[in-house]
Length: 146
Image: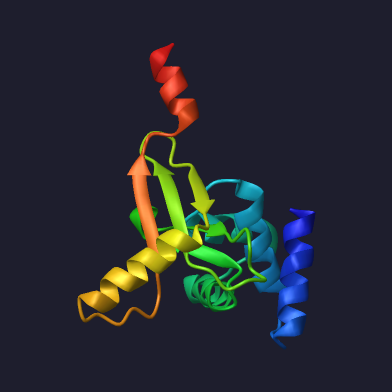
């Protein structure tokens, strides 16, 4: 988590973005979890330590972190995970375990390029790309086989 926070500080400084205390705390909560976390779970954790906060405060922090490229939203889980590579432009592919809800981020440029090429061939101009692939992770498969 320390590395992720240092990278976030560096990215924000380079892009002249403000990593306010509440934004920093939301990012810390996302990275501490080591699994996708929903906005209301974040709000609940913040209320324990920060006092009364309204949901819009958390949503604004999440919006900032998304726009800064510091986190990803996993639509299938309605949750957020830290971005492994916030200092580089990329489109992620996410492997989502149906059993334990773990998320692994891939960053395969050939997949990104193929999707873009196919979309353009279909007359579609993509402006963002996040691919969510659902299945069962290796650990859950091992547990099921045991």
